[in-house]
Length: 155
View 1 (cartoon, rainbow, N blue to C red):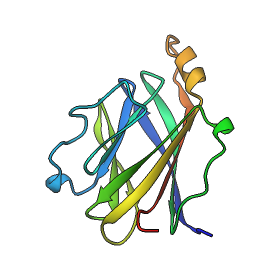
View 2 (tube, one colour; view 1 turned 90 degrees about the horizontal axis):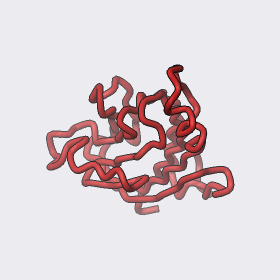
View 3 (tube, rainbow, N blue to C red; view 1 turned 90 degrees about the vertical axis):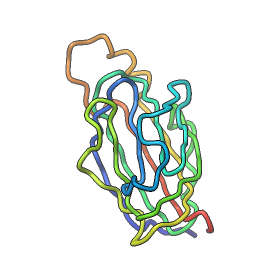
View 4 (cartoon, helix red, strand yellow; view 1 turned 30 degrees about the vertical axis):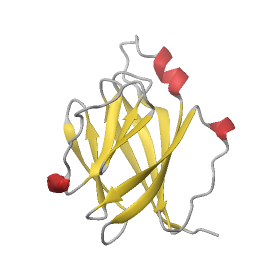
């Protein structure tokens, strides 16, 4: 049975319905966030990059990142409005968070001490609620939630 290696909670500023997770050492990437972002897809991938489409235009989302030593437990789809899984390559073992309007955020996600191939599952809830609040003038925080689970691809 897989074991949770680390867990990190971050607040992510979402703008233009989008944010991304990208290899921290982006000198090796051909396509940097947000180039070729596909707003029609919940989770879209490019080498070393995960693009996530939010249901809200501008808000702060609550993101929990888990790193597992084997396949992460499957999440009950009843608790999530969207789920998707993909592959991810990291050169450094570090992942940066990107916002459409402010660029690279200060938080780093540590996957491992070195690079490798990973699987990732992204689950999201609060999408209908953040969509309903989109026209309000109030500050929207932690309405839309994400769980991002990484595990080694070879496991």
